[in-house]
Length: 364
Ligand code: TRP
Image 1: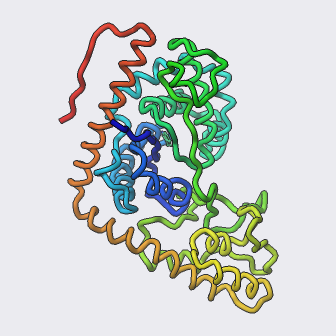
Image 2: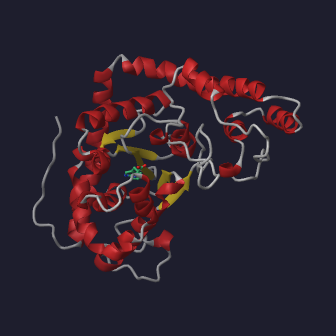
Image 3: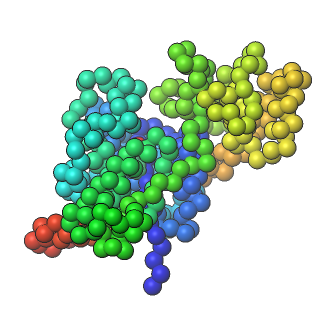
């Protein structure tokens, strides 16, 4: 029987999904769900690394993320949507895999470093915060996926995942260290040396003014208050776009090919979301020459964004009225996820000679 290759990826429930998530990774998931067996994880334990004092918010956000996924068109008949903390094999695997990561190597992880700064943690991060990249390695490897669709900021975690997969396979499955990455499983390894799949837009800018320090535009992020959410209604989209930072002096670059951080955000958004490239090219020239103003270009953007978001909003409304269905979908997805993760854990224990008993897990 032909089995589809697997995909695993996830989101941390710290709020609703926005347009940055959409072009960074969600869009890819939609495109891939027919050709791959997809597992989408809601990383609720990750959320506790920085929000342990807000359990009710995290619970709400778990439901919000699942509702957003369903709203964008993730089809639960094809893809398994599941809750990280209800798949215990992930944690058990993490415990073993953590032994294969040097502490000094972990602390060089640039994503971890920048989060310590961005989230204002300074020296006050918890021990659990340092553990989360190990948890993420286990999130991924428990599914032995061929591919992991993520945003650019996640690449350091994926590189660590690749290192751990190679090390495990060499240590416990006798894979020759000279083996090319793509051949690890064929050579007898349990874990594939996974591949990242980046989104069409690596770093969508937010709607706000550039950083006062660097002059560069900031990435779209809920915590920076510069996000347009997939769940925003038409009025919210209108007022966010109308209030969007542009360059009053028209010095900021408008040409495609410039990095988005240095661009006029209005054009970054048109290039990303407006499929009518003839309109975009024509109006970019008019804009540069002062022949068309912000308002015209903003109005067009509002139409473009609302056209994208309208069907998402309609589906979201349906699921918002059926929260029990959302829970049922998560239960079914979590059962499927446990079947795969338990199998991986059993194989990993066998490879490590720690397969003493057989156990069965049930979820009601
Ligand atoms: N760290 C990811 C984020 O915050 C979420 C995540 C957790 C994840 N586990 C994962 C992403 C495994 C990909 C694969 O966005």
